[in-house]
View (cartoon, helix red, strand yellow):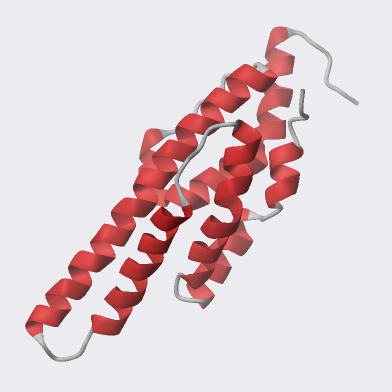
Length: 153
């Protein structure tokens, strides 16, 4: 049985760093983070989230959206908006798949009733998933206290 810190230690990204780096790189870091950590989350939770092709499509949507934006053509601007929305939807779908995988992983592997907020998953998607991964040890500590068990040293 794995420890509760395994996933957190493998990903090793603070949520504020993820937010700041994604803003500083105009979203490119977020795609790279997803590409790198999708496999880690899938391997640890034993639930396959998405293929690499899915993440490549997110990158394609983001790249073409940026390339077609503000070219002075209304049709290209509209296409840019549609691609941007499509990329956002792909992020949200991934986040909900990860939410389900993390909830099942916490329950089956560590006997933790991890309650993840669907609204936060929708609004903050990858940031919220990263936050919840980082918060797993604290959730375990809280549930041990509520059950009357002593915390691990």
